[in-house]
Image (cartoon, rainbow, N blue to C red; front, side, top):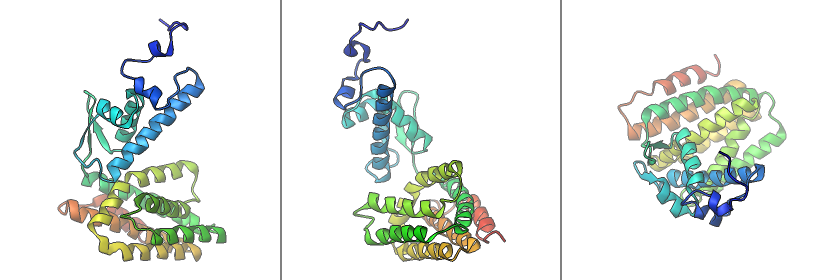
Amino acid sequence: MSRSRSESPQEQRPAGDETEAQAGAPTGEGPAAAAGGRRLALDVHGRLRAMILNGELPPGSVLLQAEMARKLGVSRTPMREAFRLLQEEGLIDARPDQRARVRSVDPEDLDAVYGARIMLETLAVSMTAKSFTAEDIERMSDALKRMRGLTVDDQPEEWHAAHHEFHGIATQAVGPHLQRMIASLGEHSERYIRLAQLGAPASWSKAYAEHEALLDALRSSDPAEAARVVARHLARTALSVLADIAPEHEPAATRTALAIAGNGGH
């Protein structure tokens, strides 16, 4: 049965959702209300995602929708959508009773993600190297300069934004569908990048040298060298984290992808 249009917004809203109005969520019907609700869910997702990635919600933490909704001052509706998005990203395991748990680092998942990233990003940088412009060089150099000027421990979000921009420029020549796949894998692997930074701070100089080498290869319009550099850069990150968290795990996907792509297509 459809709802009567005479019902008030308070009567239409499910019990326990009073905080949604406090959070500024639209209560009217129609496209504008739906868009506002979606924006709120994405905002909640972004806040929870940041809490997981920065360690405020460490692996194994139990998450309850009602409790997190109260903590963030929103209703259960955007929280449910945020939980769904986090589960799709592999950051949480949701339970049928609405319990969820922050996922522990899974070596098999790490290996699969980086194997896929190596294959896709070597393709993308190879294509990008063929059409790289002076403006692209300037933008990529600026992103690298910002990374060097930031302290990741004190300014993690700014550093990761510059890092994301750097790799985005390096892979920009592929089509939008492949760009979305690369971006999704990059976001999924961000927690592993953060673990690598925590576990191996001495590798910073090596990482920056690899970024410089990638920029040089693109500047020189050298697809084979760009592919080799990015393959080895991504593999080193994966293998560094695995050595810390699961030294017994054999990273078959990462090593196979490196053997294929790390030869620059030869």
